[in-house]
Image (cartoon, rainbow, N blue to C red):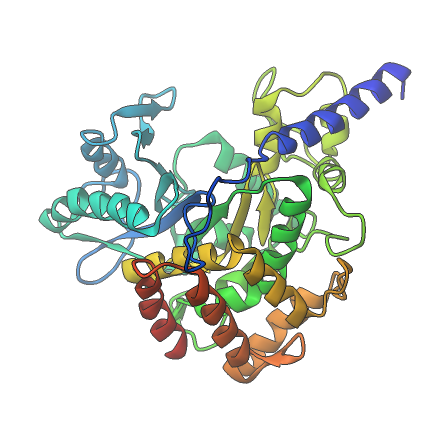
Length: 429
């Protein structure tokens, strides 16, 4: 390797760190009311994936029209009335829509996703999501379709579902097929609810990242919603989260060393650069095989689009962008989505909530007792024993009670009731 290559690699690492640092948000002024409740300390970014299915038999609706029925492509064309900024592929096929309020995209097998613009309050999230459903559901009903919020497709095996015409997904599908994992199932038949939170500093980002990582299996259990897996009844919890454990070990699950003392943005940059990006987008879109990202970008300096593409090619339980993206929850009914947004707000935007959780986890003076296998051990325990599992020294039921309790203590009187439907949902497992 030449000195120039060494310089480029070092500069690219620095640029990734700088990109993450740009996400630091100043502390909100007057973040508390006199009663201690939260006052918009940061934004909630909520993303919900759905299956578009036929009504009533819940068979998949594909991207292209079929058998005289519309496809998801036509659904997007209809939604463009309310989300007027349209992205199309080279063939003119619509792939994404957006407005000031939200963006509408499709996942690999035409799962329909709404990404709501970052909002401070749960009622704002609710308003944006209800608008989406209010304009969409009558159209779907007219064509004997419906929208489902589930963690896994309710009727169809993954490989019977087709990918949308997007080159990104073709590269990913070839990669997962080559390494022989469940990546093809993840792409085609799973759907999630993701909530992102802001951070004020690198220290704050790492703290929130670690808490979210540790809580991942518990949050997944609270939101567990996959009663069918590969067309068969499923009673084992965390089906979708467990699926991610056999997608690609280099880029999924737990980030090695994340609980180690000193782990920081630079460590995360090393993680990103230490695996293949699968494909790159500049100077043209091309697959790079097993070439590590540091080498795939070793001949030129990365710009923001390169960095964002690279981050998007990694799917750990919790992902760092210019915010902390919390990914373990399944797609759920609307009232549970609002409850989950409220729960995440009550945990991650209150320092006392984070401190309480860290104390129960055994964190002392910033030193975490967890290690790389701790989260996977928790996942395995919950899959084996459900709500009676012991996780980090406490029953899952104890953890659920604690998480709702800390959230209830800091949410205001308008947002606190949003927790109730999700709490009931978790208790029904």
